[in-house]
Image 1 (tube, one colour):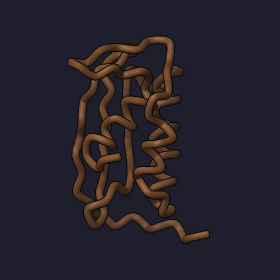
Image 2 (cartoon, rainbow, N blue to C red; image 1 turned 30 degrees about the vertical axis):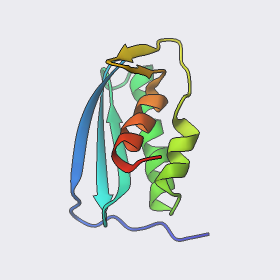
Image 3 (tube, rainbow, N blue to C red; image 1 turned 120 degrees about the vertical axis):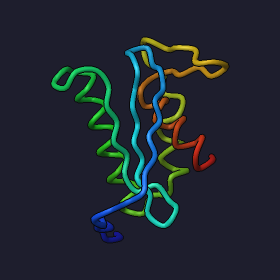
Length: 111
């Protein structure tokens, strides 16, 4: 198994806001050498159940990326997960919070 990449003190990042059936989701992706390194996601009020689940998805996505899992594999695992509050955003159906995170990664890094 590969060793977890250590986080440098500073990393470039981008933030994407995307509407979901639970409200606006804010996704911050840091990059190392032009590749996604960490994902931070927030929604709603800190301490509520949805917020905790969103944080967990971000942490697990970051763990995968920092351990060498290709972003395309992460996208494949979380895209098209359907939840109970799908929402059309323009011409895109956002099926769940994991789907929204996968969509943002796919939008930036491809399939």
